[in-house]
Length: 303
Length: 282
Image (cartoon, rainbow over all chains, first blue to last red; front, side, top):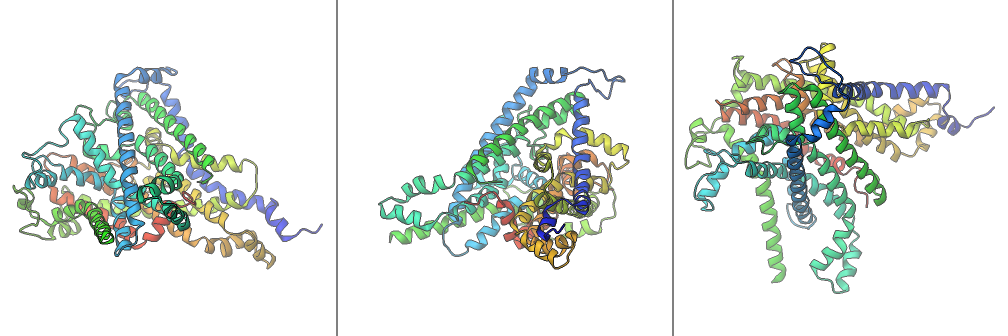
């Protein structure tokens, strides 16, 4: 039987099957061996009362989960995480949009600014957190010095000293780092607006604000959607910047769910509880991911 | 006249953004070269009276094993190795898998693609306890290799996701033509698809390196000594202590920031393409 080359390429002949296995297997071993297997193991752990200080590890079913949901500490951490997520995402969206609109204008040095804007995003999270902690320092920090020397503040403040203020200062550091990402995504979206669309609106007598509101903003829908979901998913898992800036303090004021799960597992050594908490977080992020694909699928933007 | 005002406002806004972006990092750099007295002066001196690059020199030469400088030097070297190994493994196993998912037809292809993608989104906190125990059994805890392997597990799905898109964008006719000319199936992948996907490969390399360089939670739990501790852990450790040499931590921070910042400035186009890859195609 004669087969065309195209036919051979598409069909899964014997050599094709071997190649397929050789191509897929290593990636499956690396990914699933270190993700699916530990995940299953972690789930098994979450069904036990596994405490490193105790000798036995009794099976408790979903007891750890029930405990976690009833736990006021966890619920407070959840509320803080939602606050962090909503405030940081919204600030990043608004500032990112402003920067994207600016970078979309024609001016000298635009290329340079577009490159410079990437710097905060490229900065490692740990360096970013350490840098802002130094800037916020109650005695020697640059923020206090700047605000008092310009007369905006009459005495030094302890920026990370009270729960609510500390949370907002951590958010500010996160916003500084992540706004560039939002700006770049929205800028890419902005650059696809056909010029005729804005011209037509101009001819119809629309002012700058009307053009922005009725043409630009609707056009940015897919970009804004991606930013919203990407950032909310990331923000919900926030750990690194909290660890370096406040270690969850003061008075648990910046303790988020990921940080709470970390302390349960590695400070209190309640591995079972820690695993259950981690699973709840993974579940929440998974739900967000499903939402993500749904929304993007409807948009037809295709990730 | 109105136009001039608008022009002026535009440049002022650009200047404000530039200042906001650069000022904190500039302050970090200044802190790293200012003397200890300058750092603790009140009112704060914005430009140090005594600037020197001594701390950087100390980081590269220090032999005092208890000092931050020594730890920083090793941490930078560890981070470099972890990033290199993780990138090599991830691309080595990820690119063929991406090609298979883009070109081969087989049952459960869609399910497998989603499974890879889903594994990328899992929060590390959900896995870290199990990985801690697993790496202990494999005697890979506190080793550069073990950390690189863990990083490969979540960088590989990213490589697959991006590279699959690049392969899908290449017309399959090109490989078919090569096969008519006598190329094997593997040969067509090697000689036709791979070279055409080169921009995608550059992008994924950058992202793999940046991700490995930045990761913290796994590194915090899975490493414990200068043997394997990467730079984010070293920085976190010293900034958490009471007796802190801020200037030295700043110098370590600047050195840690240098590779990703330079990479992003030089390869800006690839980064922007990567950040927006497939995301926004209006």
